Length: 273
Image (cartoon, rainbow, N blue to C red):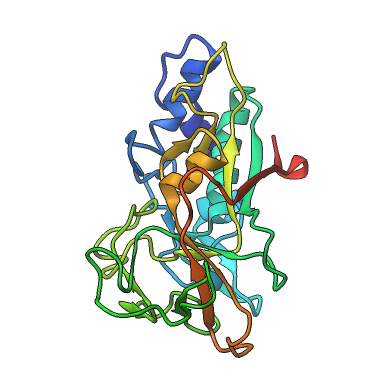
């Protein structure tokens, strides 16, 4: 609770809800990226600096830097998933009586019958495109799914590497607490997701401090809409279907078309505050 209170009122001086939101948000965001939010006693909280299954799932776990592992044994780490950061921001806002909506992001692309595509998060280089390795996409006849993405089995991005088939891993916007020590190769560390979780803050005092209603505490940025999220964050969409062998980690990928978002935002009432 001390961390929630610190994030709520640690930057005092707000005279209305909009001001309170802004002062809380500055502890998550520099305005263009993460401010490396910390606990009340200045302990680090970091975004996916360990493997996908070794990260905190909720606000209490990320604040305590402790949670049980898959076998129920104690695990001490600063690392957390996006849902934990979303709940952390919501908890801080709730201290000031500010309502927010826990928001689920996923692909809304519906032309594929092999499941909802994964979101491939910036930045990547696609073979044969401007500034990238020369070559031909692996699936040129599968329009628009013309690129092959070969992911690690079990945990898509761990261990980190540069070459993932037709895609080359590049530096992108880092997450909270990521730096050259915790993630020496590429940021963000995890950049292939089925879902992502952010926070919607409905208009307070007639406006929101950033001008946008959707706040992404994992990265310290905001979005105006699903189309805004796609434009800022999405490099492509990945789905597995023939000739991708089941369980192989090999996927078909297509890149977004400007002006036609393939993203949906869904409010989750039971996780909203």
